[in-house]
Image (cartoon, rainbow, N blue to C red; front, side, top):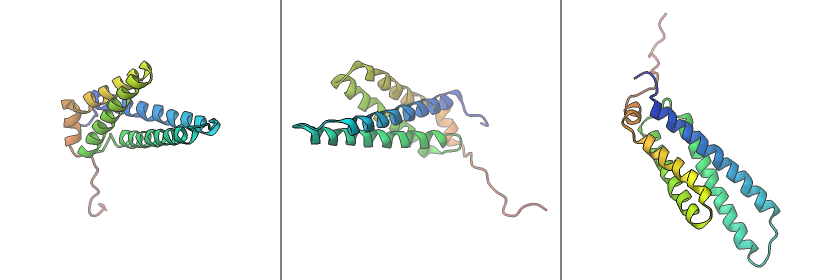
Length: 140
């Protein structure tokens, strides 16, 4: 298999989208934290915002790293994509129930990432080694 299948390419696009939106959430939370007026519960709310920003930053980094390793990565890259998909799905589902229904879009992105990452064609792509072996000695 010399070309990445459509399911793997689609999962890669979803990973880049999740990473970009997570990065946007980090920037938004940083702005909110910087301009937040502390009141009676100000310290607690600031701590919660910083915790959420840290989690979004970790999700963004993981998404970007996994997406860039999709072309030559192995089984661990696919498992990492499934984990990121589940984290996105569960976290967004909780946020949709607790906060706003707009989080449903991220919930569907997480579910789509899991489905695309466990597809047979994607699994077959990651089961084949894609690294380039260098010869022990260059031909003369």
